[in-house]
Length: 52
Figure 1: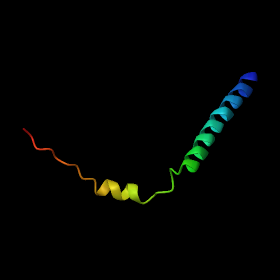
Figure 2: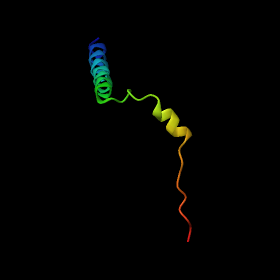
Figure 3: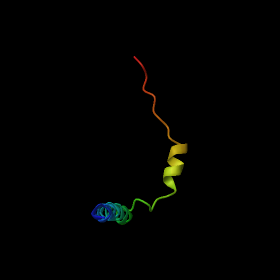
Figure 4: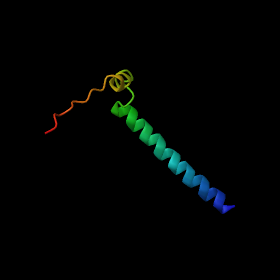
């Protein structure tokens, strides 16, 4: 029975960590620009260097 309480505490700790990371990413602005990454992948040009 004590194992269930231990697993519950560990899972709540891990879930809290993921929630903190999610809130940190929102405050950091990770999800504000949802338009340019999809456009950047379509128009990604690489510069070819001339070979010697």
